[in-house]
Image (cartoon, rainbow, N blue to C red; front, top):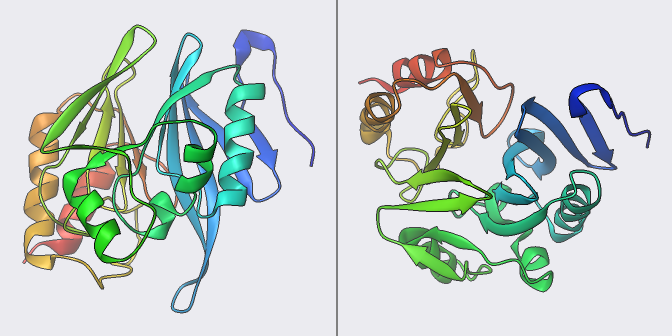
Length: 232
């Protein structure tokens, strides 16, 4: 499939590898999108985030299967010319770690909340290799990304990632795109969801870009929308 490469300013609006797309959000962040076939919601596009600095990159959430994950790894390495230093699943569902084995096979370490590791063991899924209790700060090039658990919502283990140098928040499935429905609630804590989002808003008052787990990225209005959707 045709690759669109804009050499001016080094901007890469979109790169395609069959069922995986990599779309530039800011100078050093890219949304990767793959697809999951579900019984209730059909063929669902699923977002993750690639954060780069210099010649290093972090990947948040894997594509939905190992084949798609392999394609993403090649896109990051061959098109962005970055070494992936770690992959971070933001919760235990397949749209976050369905392609984790491909990263392990490529020698890329995985890091997740200890609850995510616990839930992958309970559900007999591929387990992330390293865990953290509440939060961790990861280095990519000369910059840092904060990954933190603020409370339950979409799942018991959902974490978010914040890239302060470009004010980008990856909310994963905890955060909804504008006008979205509540979506899959099989592992949700509906009572805690709005409070969890409120804590994120307090922690990151300067965020400019918000990436949800599904659908279009936006601004902090996505946080307001998600909180209202789940308020008691």
